[in-house]
Amino acid sequence: MYEIDARLLERAKAGKPVLVSLIGCGQMGTDIIAQVDLMKGMEIPVIVDLNTEIAVKSLEMAECKREYVITNDLEEAEKAVNAGKLVITNDWKIAVHLPQAEAVIDCTGSPVMGATITLECINNKKHIVMMNVECDITVGPILRQMAENAGVIYTLAAGDEPAAIMELYRFANALGFTVVAAGKGKNNPLDITATPDTLADKAKARNMSAYMLCEFVDGSKTAIEMAAVSNATGLVPDVQGMHGAKSTVDTLNKVFCPKKDGGVLDKVGVVDFAIGVHPGVFLTITTENKRLRSSFIQRDMGEGPYYTLFRPFHLCSMEVPLTAAQAVLYKESSGHPLKKLTSECIAIAKRQLKAGEKLDGIGGFCYRVSIDHADVAAKEGFLPAGLAKGAVLKRDVNIGDIITYDMVELSESVLLQLRKIQDQMCK
Image 1 (cartoon, rainbow, N blue to C red):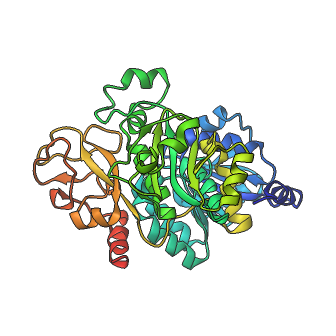
Image 2: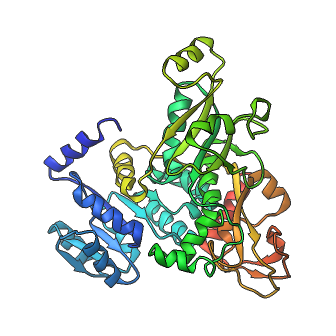
Image 3: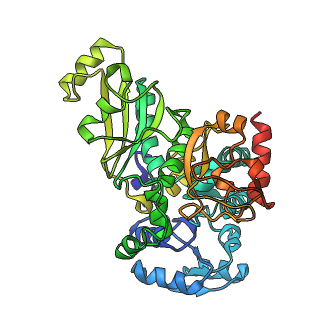
């Protein structure tokens, strides 16, 4: 990726820009449109939203002035793209089936849609950029394996915290350092009781969905993101839910280190998060080599034996086009799950739940998401949080209880079918 700007410029000069379809035109999708519009050597041929008016509005908000055609006809879409026009559609299959498209960005946020889109991408030999972390932590291993078998890249998205952490992890791992902890900062206090109602005013002031804000405040998004890191690296949560200790950038290596050395960890090789450090992601690393410890001191990294690698920004969707370019030009990912899950995201009841209730989504009123070891979750029958939405309770569930498979009735879906196959493969 070191000459990615030059490689893109080559594509631009040859008149063959990297063509990346976009599915989902919310806040993230709009940022991607704006960013790609600035780039040389990359274009978006198709943008998809259930409401094409929203897609048109996204173009306006992104200050993208490309000529566009609205169509659900693949042949018409092909002709429009060949003529240099942008296609807007509410049929996501156009984005995947379009022959000119080399990669697809899933920006839907729906685990079921993520699984469906990814399967279609694999069948049509399109690289898939997975912004849908909720899908990844549920069926990422099997999707990645299927993509690899088909010769396409399945990848997490640059700019999101898991991929930003992966940059640091790959750096440290390649140099042979011991990774003690990998984590992200959390800028708001953790409130596991938060609901969209309690956050309505704050969400309105920030011009965002109360459900989306709740997903961050109640810790669900943090658990999901760190599970993605865990599943991509083999690092584990030290305890169920992680520690979420308070820290500053300067004290990360003193907090996220073993208890015997004054930190909070029972073991090394973990994922966690820090309250009070934001924006940014971090690693705590160490080495037994005395020469290198001396060199760390000379480079103002501290006395050790633990050292902090800190990336002070993650630009979310603004960085995502780089992942698409990396997949197309280098056939590499910005991060992807290993062959099997290391961690599982689990659903914990936020309130007293009654038999017959249908569970709402992540960031809602029914449950919050936490993280545990995948083998523990499997042994205890914990319901993966990615499967929880729409599940119907077969019995009452007490506040604070972990929801298990035997408590719910699940509707059949592509996501559930893939999960069943994945579970069988990984036994």
